[in-house]
Amino acid sequence: MKPSLDPNREFVIGIKTDAGFSGRRVVQIDTLTEAAQCIALLAITPQSQATLYSKHDLPAISQLVSQQLRIPLDQVTLVRDYANCHSSTACTQAILALSATTRAMLINAAANRWNICPTHCKMESGKVVQKEKSFDFELGELITEAKQGDIPLIPELYLQHRQPKS
Image (cartoon, rainbow, N blue to C red; front, side):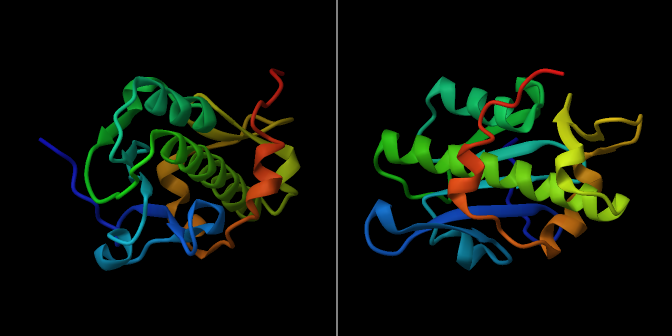
């Protein structure tokens, strides 16, 4: 059974293009109408599952989401729907931006809950954890806070692409 996109209960962000792919921007999705205007979408469910909506189903795309969100590959579902990305290269770049943005927003949400700096948090095994303590949140627990957060700038996110192992 194919998952259906539900922006009311999931944390959903997408990539829109304004003028060619160079004018791309990450946006939070609140309605299915907004979703239809995106070239790729990424949703986090309350059960901490990631659903990627993309026209392309290259095996590496799901793995990219898994790596960026530090979740097992079996927690990533790929749905060929909603998105209207026509180039596999552009789609891969969009998914990298979506995954990195989602990671940053979930980390920021946890940091806000703990009232600490986001640099004291990391994603690990499908959770946001405090680096020096044994506190953690499942990704699905942070949906409400993530929806209220600001979308970080894309260039900042690429610097975090590979997080060192601790």
